[in-house]
Image (cartoon, rainbow, N blue to C red; front, side, top):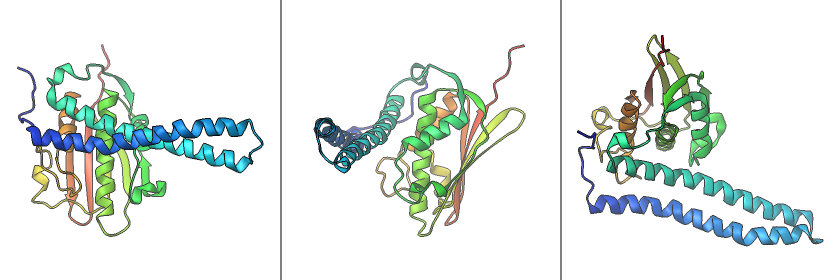
Amino acid sequence: MTDQPSLTLNLSHWHIVAHELTTPLSIIGFNADVIKKTLPLLMAACGSDQPHEKQKTLLTQIETAITMISDYDAICSAYISMVTMLLSPIEEIYTEFKLLSMATCVQQALDSLHFKYDLKSKENIINQVTDFQFSGNRSLVIHILFNLFRNADYFIRHAGRPGQLHLSSSEDDKFFYLHIKDTGAGIDETALPHVFEPYFTTRKDVRIGLGLHFCQRAMRMMQGEISIHSKKDEWTEVTLKFPKIVAAS
């Protein structure tokens, strides 16, 4: 029997997913148009007597557009990954597993995410992850981290006070652990047991709560686990558990 999710997305849910993709896709299209219009101007400026400042301004516009395209491309990829996983038998998705560096995955996820609130400042991201190697699928891991970092950014913003994101790691005899802790608004204890249920969300800006449900399925696909602990109005900590690679005897 295939490991299909025990849920059926009706048309209204797919409408929401499509709507969530509309904004980042529109931004990608807009910035691609900016590049299309600005690049010829820059090339013309380079071959003329126009002031250096004019050339610098055009180059900055192109660099900004490219950065935004990269950011929102990551958001689209996240939604597409989520939809693909919910629609398909899990063993048919992301069959490529390889040895990955957790420090590299964390940094790639941080670099790809366009933080909106306190985490815009790198000083508010305390990265103390000691690197470890694990077997996994890079796309899945990046999406899991992307989702969790976005949640942290949101809950820090809604704490009504400055907050930070703390990243660390630990290990025991059999597992590596990645700890993701934010000093944000926290999760109510009545909601905490339900956070991995499909469609459940505590975020007011999310209309279809599939993010943590997806993360749980993805972690289990990689023989790992995800757990969440939180204290309302103080903090939330998510722990990702990865099995250590057993050397062949």
